[in-house]
Image 1 (tube, rainbow, N blue to C red):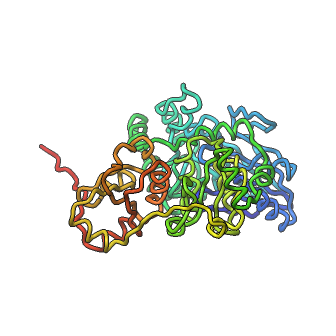
Image 2 (image 1 turned 180 degrees about the vertical axis):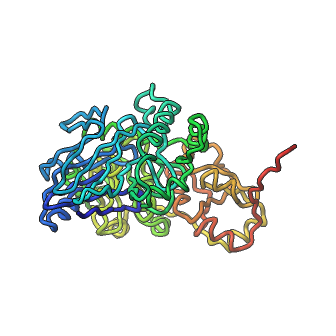
Image 3 (image 1 turned 90 degrees about the horizontal axis):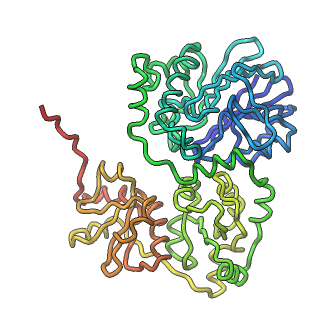
Length: 470
């Protein structure tokens, strides 16, 4: 038996490949499914099942394309009501994959259909648990997502279900089982996941706060709900796509891979009014970009920030990328449901510049220059998360988290120069592109962000834990 974790770091996602005796199963596949088919073919195996742990919120699963192309059966856990042909398992149902077995264990809590799959090897030994978003390494799945789709499923109700699932279904299992979760650190599906992507169940029982046997249900619910931030706005839309179905990635790629010359691109942008999304690195974007385009760099948490900043998942999008990265940009957009890519700029921004088209720039300064200017007490706007800002920030800086920028544009002066920064320059360039598109031109961005600023000795404030008053 082979059981392989296939981890995609940019969205902190883990799919799983199981193969035994010429049959294979894929658990929670990403949107681009050919690599799974190729993996099975290399083993001389046929994909028999596509197991889904739940209706995902943070990405669009590849279950439909994979089932169609491989002739596989899609499997969900109890209570699931997919809008397409699938097998809805009963609690405890066992599936044969070659000489291995997969047992469905209904573990509601993250969502009501959430199901953990127990993998049993050819010798009949229980090997591991593919837990989806029920149990992470160091954490458990947040219980506040389903209510954005079904209002009656409050976070308190789901947290109570999760407590019961963990205590009655997961914790009684053997300590030597390997836990294989759907996500690792960086995912918005939990609040304190470890960077490790597997562990033994026994170690999780000892170290994971949610598996503390001394917690009452009331205490568990309180701990689980404390510190949850609002989920990204695209999450409910991804859930619906996973439930109802979606276009094939092949169709999306065919539509998105239309190459337009600068003249054609300009006409389309003016007539159709799509969003022009520039996926180049922040430093390249700053040197020159198409006016009104928005920069979200491909080489960081691209999918997450697309989901945070582009509110309409059906928004028509024209791409500007580094040459050769058009297909990658389309695939990574499709992973979070942004399927309406209508083409890209052939030759990238350099072709636009060579054609003599209008362009804009973002002025940047380095950290040393920031330190010089800071003595004059300029307006400094920090677009990091509130928790980052509260931990440590430049003295007298103003905090406007990037994901709240559109609701707080009034805090950005138009008649007074200001300085913009984030942690390293990625998020502040997203903010800079949004401000430029809305008419701001009186600011500079700090290259290297707060991480570079700290090295200059600029005065900062640090969080001090309040003293308990007796």
